Length: 245
Figure 1 (cartoon, rainbow, N blue to C red):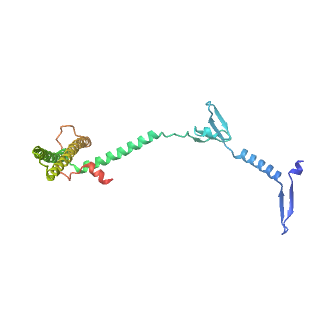
Figure 2: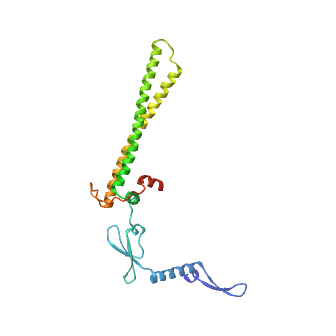
Figure 3: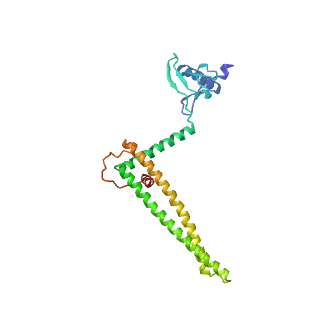
């Protein structure tokens, strides 16, 4: 039976060359035999832990245990390779680490600009005072214009009321003037709020710059003993960072 299933015949092709003919059963048998011999001769062993924590030694590691790590052993039990467990990176931790890295890089850039822009603490304080004085002047101008517009609006409304009390039609020019003044006052009030907010931001920003500059220079609060070199071109670190982006 086996002989009939697994047969080998020698035939000659058209050119007279001998050709070995192997039927399908013989081909399968030879494949199994050679595969088994190759596995016994070349396969390593793998040592891993199963779900129960027990150590298992086998010719392969099941896919569900690969992530836990394993060891590759020789036939004699010698450790050939250690595959560590896969590290699962938490997305939140990764994002936090990236943010910390970006913040550190931004701080380094700010420190460099501070040290290049100001040679002393006094220079930095003068730059702050100039910015605040400029904003104070702008706020004063806005408030002054706002007060004048309010007075003009009050006067124009009084004129319109006089026309109405006397039974006269309020002139279109006067009505347009009242409308324009109302818009001017609204714009001025918004500008006043914006400038006041900007002043607070500048004050806080320079407070941070001064504290950081003192740390970089190793100064203590209230110290004025550093040598006052000629001032460099004062540059706002925040604006420099924006220009560089």
